[in-house]
Image (cartoon, rainbow, N blue to C red):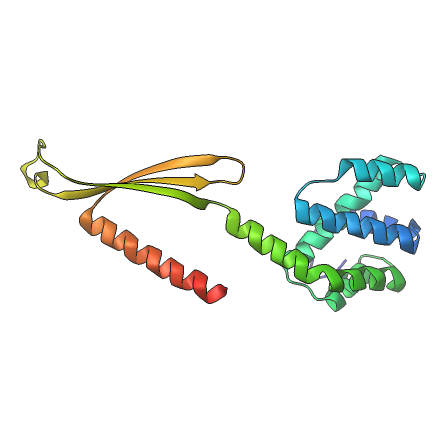
Length: 193
């Protein structure tokens, strides 16, 4: 097993099962894997179609796809080059020819996959709307809080599958500290793009 991966023997056996596929079948399966990585869900209809077209059991095909999917997503997460993908597949027991085929497909698709993952990552907890109210405390049980300024914020955040309202109330000094932190986060995000 490759030093770069920490996975159980199941993934290794799933990857070794790819040896039984022809080059054309392997290309199609890797293409399904890339589609799954891009869309975030298994293309069930395409799996069933692939299995029936190539006279395979869909359960075995799904297991191969899951092993390949885990391997590819980890390679993507580690920003692996095509050469590294080749070496790690060989270390898992895949023949040099099959690993080079997968490596060449990886090389042609890597930039698109990385861009898709970057966009998905940035979409998590995306700020959709912001509403604010500024006020002055007119009455309180504590004399020290009278005539103090406060700010109420309502953030509408897209968590991926739904929107969520987050309510905050801050004093003026807390708001200035929050604003400073947001400006610092904005500068850091700008430096990455």
